[in-house]
Image 1 (cartoon, helix red, strand yellow):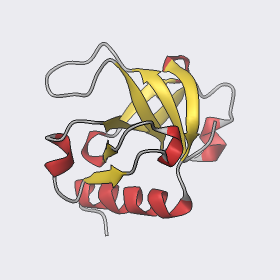
Image 2 (cartoon, helix red, strand yellow; image 1 turned 90 degrees about the vertical axis):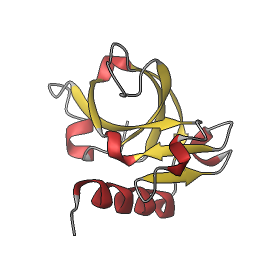
Image 3 (spheres, helix red, strand yellow; image 1 turned 135 degrees about the vertical axis):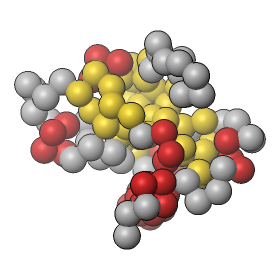
Image 4 (tube, helix red, strand yellow; image 1 turned 90 degrees about the horizontal axis):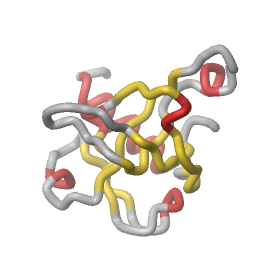
Length: 115
């Protein structure tokens, strides 16, 4: 598992407006952490197919169907960065291109006001 990989994950339980259930996520954490066996958590960003979520502005990154192994057009929700136990990753779907990861990084910068 490495940065940019897209996985189907079980991200329940959650509460309130947090994304939950079984859904795709993109791995954001550094590859050094991702491969360390004693490092059990991983930083991810959830992905949604909701049209409402797609309208969230610069923190919602549009993904075309087929990219990263996703079967439908989707939105990476950069304003919902979260940490999961690696055991919650169910199945690898694919990997985002360097260009898509660059767009996601820009969305994250917008979400946390990082320049």
